[in-house]
Amino acid sequence: MATDPPLIALNGARLRFGDRPLFDGLSLTLSKGERACLVGRNGSGKSSLLKVIAGLQDLDGGERFVQPRTVVSYLPQDPDFSGGGSVADYVAQDPAGGPDAPPHAVEAALLRLSLDGTRRLNSLSGGEGRRAALARCLLGDPAILLLDEPTNHLDLPTIEWLEGELQRFRGALLVISHDRSFLGNLTNTTLWLDRGRLRRLDKSFRYFEAWAEELQQREAEAQHKLDRQIVREERWLQRGVTARRKRNQGRLARLQGLRRERAEWLRQTGTAKLESASSGRSGDLVIEATDISKVFEGPEGPLPILKDFSTRIRRGDRLGIIGPNGAGKSTLVKILTGALAADSGSLRLGSNVAPLYFDQRRESLDPEASLWQSLIPDGGDTLLVRGRQRHVVSYLKDFLFEEGQARQPVKALSGGEKARLLLARLFARPSNLLVLDEPTNDLDMETLDLLQEVIDDYEGTLILVSHDRDFLDRLVTAVIAMEGDGRTLEVPGGYSDYQRHRKAAGAATRPARQSPAKAGKTGGETQKGSETQKGSETKARSRNKLGYKDQRELDALPARIEKLTTAVAKLEGNLADPELFSRDPGAFTRATEDLAQLHAELEAAEERWLELESLREALTQ
Image (tube, rainbow, N blue to C red; front, side, top):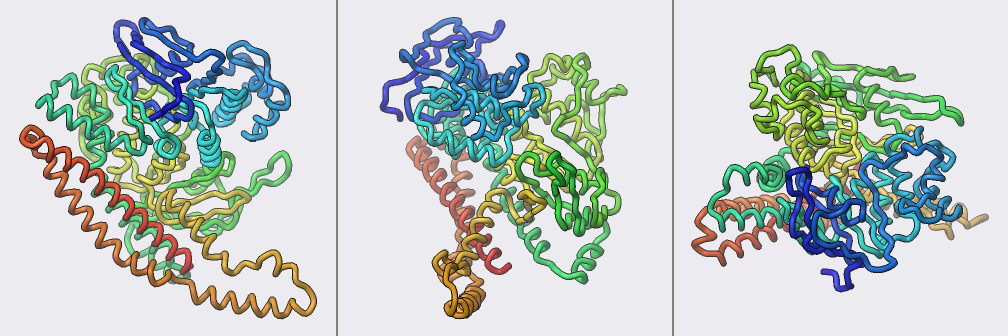
């Protein structure tokens, strides 16, 4: 909890949206050193609250206080570039109407975010526009930073850079984001806007799900019932928190199994094994790429995208593709699906492959058509979804729409609801290969949770391009990293496994390196140094396995994980007793605390197993 006096505060704040109250009697403080996130279901008023704090929207009641001479900087979700001009001019301008920033400060900001100040605003891509808006926001040493979806359209290197910048920020920070990893790594305070009330947790967002579930359980036990209106209002909580935590126990085990299968598949080498694996089962092979290369002509000469790239994708694989913007992720997807020819190498698609492609630009929706017509443009009341007939209203409910919305026009939907309708239309089409190119851009957490569930239940093969680390960790069985200059690296697991692999691979090669002092030896010492290096390489080869303690720990971890999983299931069963709270509130509280502790221990054990397994694989390759 912050001890400094607040830099900004709201007291008894009230705001309405038409006839609907967003919040009433809301109080909030932000102090120096606080890095807070604002979370809540779509439409709860998060962006409106951020604008109120920024002073860009008037309250219908209550007070807003800002310490004198406090500079507040605000990043909108959709920055306005309609004024035209150059990037440098835009970054230099003070949104509050003050004097322009000095040229040297503008140049430094542009350099930090890899922006060309001479570019015209109307020529920027989504990611470049977001970086320009961030440069403008971070300029001028603000005391308070208010950021609405700052990671939208940013690539992973830029997101990680931004995390570092904001972690070093010494003022007050309040951020809205759908990126769970970003929030978990960055924040030390969580604010939850829930049905017009603002709840506060003085911990990082990574503790939000357990906290929210505990609050919900307490409310449910205290009230003994939830009427239909509350069930509707808490749909995000039910589907995004409680249900996901319970489902994830089985899904995590299944995902780890798929990742182990992928790891074994990647270890297979040699032409004979390749042919045997490819032809063992009918339809098992989806895509086989061999020695693929692709070069584009850039303004400064040839730009290699792929160099001798090879991979095999089997039925049921879930492949994530990562890399900085411009590295060629979308190009790789198009080559793998046969939409773009490679310069050299061979591509083989399996039999009966029916791909479904969801690109960054998204499909357009007719704003005048109803949700019903958007799904069934030719009329009728049922559609075929994965081989069975579904009534359109029932299918819309799977995507969190109410029955009364089915006949409403698309133009009445919020941005998140439009995204859900697009997903509903996408997944109604028959396919066995799903290709998603940046599907998480501009999606709220509610829709992200839904998308994860739908993908998790998808029975075909998945190719996913994404900058969302948490999304990748939850869904993919292997990651292909495009590392620039045509280089690629494939690692079993999710994004966290890729990071651990790179770290472990670096540690494994360190003993064989020569120090600068040894590298500088000349003359008669050269031969001796060469012999020493050979001896070191021999020792390094003999150490290409885990140490005794690490190996024992790795061997023991599966049993410990199984034991913890059993204990978690037992406690969850106890807490499912509807009479426990009223019969023994103390026992309920102790069980809830024990469950949180067991979840933390289970997560730590799983993380340690993955770390040791990645290290073992790196040492044996």
